[in-house]
Image (tube, rainbow, N blue to C red; front, side):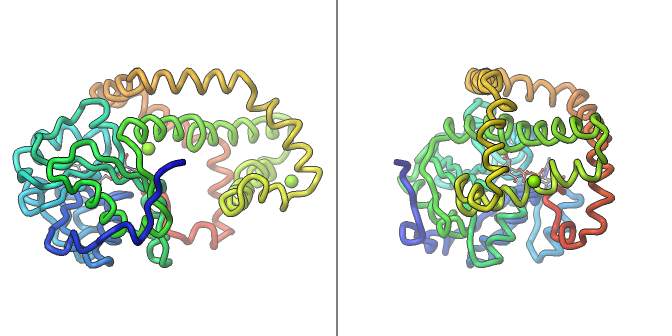
Length: 335
Ligand code: NDP
Ligand code: MG
Ligand code: MG
């Protein structure tokens, strides 16, 4: 059984004398900075001049260049894109980290794959919300929190674990539950989850279903509602009551089809592919490929991003969502 922590395990007063510098004000940065501030923590933001800088100032934060923010901080939470963290860390964070301060991450990638090697006199802590950043904020504003994982890579002060829990309380996560993990487990499971299931697996499943229907002559709008729109409603049921709870709400016909057809679509060959993905994550092949892609100008990545935007499901969906104002009026999850 995983070791879980809740509100009563965490002491937010550990932050009462501390300044937290949130570096980056994107998906996670804006959410964690605002949640911590609303929980009474003194937060400043570290950035370069640009879009995020203006947003953070408009939200009422004191904003500094990254090196200046680090100089002023006792706790540094590095919320830059993973592929930029190592460079910014080397140039603007490491030279100014105070002995006895704490360096936080929300994903273990750079520590686990050795891209960032912090000095021995700082705590190195992971607080990884298991949620997109915009929901970290939305759920907190609703009075709750999203679950999070914590890990300690380096405990220079002897206080790292308590600090991790206090931070979780500040962003709302001890309300939902915090799980003890390691940088290795978080990094490998996070990469696997997003590739095999949450992002890669699901979007490929949606596209394949949509294409199959459209190629067979059905209307793209009908295919969109069936394969994409309705997914959210099904996932909400799973989220609230698990797979059986979802099956309680669907018709018996749908439930029978679920049992006999699901494993034909996501078959043994998919499981073999999953095992192979996991192996390439564990042995560092995926990390090397992604780091190299960034070092060589992201040509493949950009080409794939553009091609995916052109998919018919995207055009059809954009038109249909215009009419469903209640679907698109929420703050977008993408930036
Ligand atoms: P985003 O891409 O949303 O935001 C990045 C931020 O960093 C932006 O504010 C950007 O500002 C700023 N930035 C980029 N380059 C620099 C630079 N050279 N100097 C200063 N600021 C810079 O990142 P995410 O929030 O998605 O990811 C942050 C971390 O959180 C990652 O480790 C990620 O793995 C982790 N994480 C993310 C989740 C998510 O929901 N997205 C979920 C769980 C973990 P500008 O406007 O100037 O570009
Ligand atoms: Mg991830
Ligand atoms: Mg149906």
